[in-house]
Image 1 (cartoon, helix red, strand yellow):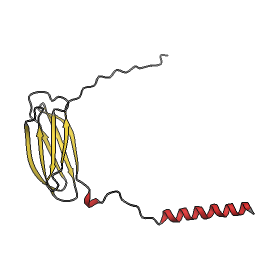
Image 2 (image 1 turned 30 degrees about the horizontal axis):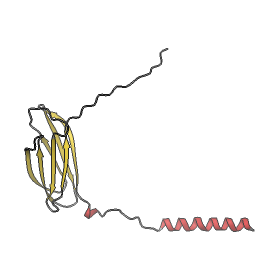
Image 3 (image 1 turned 135 degrees about the vertical axis):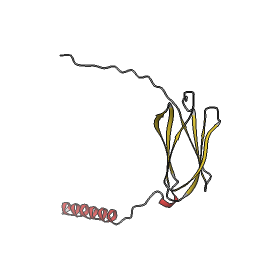
Image 4 (image 1 turned 120 degrees about the vertical axis):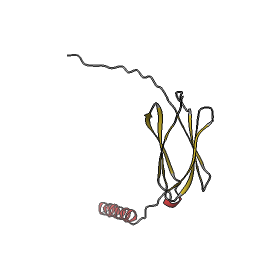
Length: 137
């Protein structure tokens, strides 16, 4: 008798768990309308010995953005105001000298919230040595 009761309890618990998970609504962590715009900066390579970067804005609503690119000493190399929804811009940085680690500073300010995101870019050199073990016949 105890064995039948424990089987019934197990079945009831399984059915209740299935029902509670089946009819629950998934909750989103953030609302799509209030998500901040995504900014992505990609390094594309060199063109005429100058580095080329691409900045991609992915946002839901049209907004103004202020892009400022600064050099290692803090001087402004380029600045512009752009507006739109999903924007992609490429920038070739004209410089005579090699860019050190963290030598370029990208500042992106949103027009409506005045929130500024800062990114740094530069050459980072790593020297790695690996030990290899090979089977000889």
